[in-house]
Image (tube, rainbow, N blue to C red; front, side):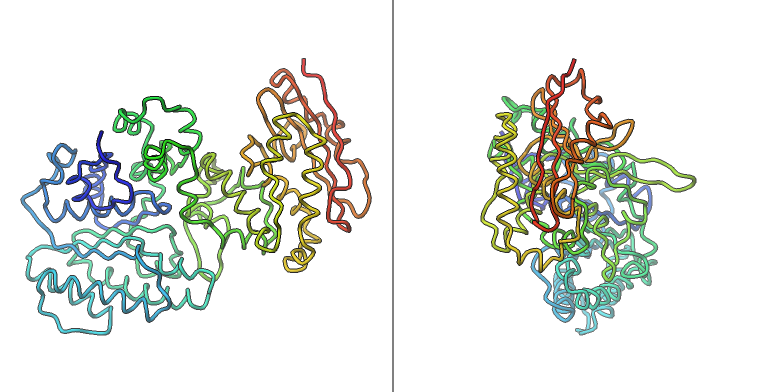
Length: 515
C-alpha cells in the first residue's frame, strides 16, 4: 500500500514519498485555458494548499513531478515562469503591524530565492510591485502569483471587529498591486475560506474570476465517489461504503458531491468513524453568534439563501448563514429560481458535521457550569423505546442549566431556545432526525427515526402551567399520517416549556397504529 498523505500539501514531497494522489492536474490546464486571474473558496483542510502547490510546480516547469498524471502530456514544459507564492496558512496574525511584517518577510524570501537586486522597503505595496517588475525583467516572462489562505489573517481576528477591519485594509492595499501589475502577470490564483465583499477587501480585486460556484470546478478540491473507489481501492476492503458516504460525503458546489479529504485519510489510517475534520476547529465564534442573535437551530436543516449571502462577507456585518456555508458547516442541497434570481437550499453536508455542530452548540452551555450531558441517555431512551426515561432525561438537563446562564444570554423570551436545545440534544446524540418536517397541512417541529419507529415531536412554550396544546396539535393536524405504512410504530410526543419555570411542564405521548 502507498503512504497516506496526511498533512502533506507539497506535491514534491507527496510524489517523492510514494503517497496516494488523486489526480486533479486536469484542472490546471482548464484554468489556464479559461483565463488568468482566479479566486477559489473552500473550507479548511480541503486540499486547497496542495492544489496551489500543484499550480506552482507546473509553472516552474518541474515535469518530473507529473509523471503518470494528466498534465504530463498536456502542458508546455518548455516554458518556465517565475512564481511568487504567499501563504497565510501558518501562524496567527496578532494585528495589522504583525501582518505587514509577515508579508514583507515572505516577499524578502523571494528576493533571496531569485537573487534579486532590490532596495529593501518597509512599504509592502512598493516591495511587492518591485519584485514583480524585477522578475518580469530578468526572466523575460510574466510572473505567476499564488496566494494561499488569503483571508486567514482576518478570520483569525473576526471577533474583534476593529482589529479585523485594520487587517482587512492592509490586505486590501497589498492585493491592489495585482490589478495595477496586470500587464506583468501570467496567472493569479487566490484561495481562502471566505469571499469578502467587493466593497471591502475585494474592491481592488474585482478582476478575479470567482470559480467557487462554477460547475466546471465543483470537484477541484475533495474526492468524488469514483476517485475514492479507484485511487484508494486497496484500502476499501472490509469498509462499509454506505457508512463512509453517510459520515464524510455530501459537500456540494453545484456539481458532483465530494468527500472531505482530511476525513477520508484519517479514517483509512485509524479505521474508526470519528469527526476528524470537525475536531480540528470547533466553531466557537459561530455558536456565540447563534446565542447572541437567538438563532433557531433547527432551521439549518433547510436554510434558504440568495447568491449574495453565499458569496459576500463583510467584517463589520457578519451574517451567520454566510460563515456557515463558506466554512463548510453547510453545503448546497438544491437550487431554484424565483424570477431572475437564483436561490440556494442549504443543509448539513453529512452526519459528521450535523452531529458535531449540535454538540458544539450544547458545549457552549456547558462552559457556564453545566455538568450534566445527557446525549447518551437520550440515545438509549429511544433505543429502548422508553419515553418516560426520555422525559426524565430532558427535565434533568434543563434543571441543571444555571440561572446565571439565562441572565447572561437573555434567553427567557427566546421561545426557539428550548426547541433548539432539544433538537441539538437529539441530533448531537447521533440519532436520525428531521427538523421542520413538511406535511401537506403544516410542519412537524421534529421527527426522530430509529429503526422502524418514528417519533413525531411538537414543542410549545407556555407562560406558566401545562396546557396540553402540543400533543393536541399533532393529533388535530394528523402529522403522523405521513409515516403510516412507512414506519411500523409511530409515537406522538407533545412537549411544553414554561417561561417562568424554565423547564418542561408538559410531556405526554401516544402511540398510533401504522397499518
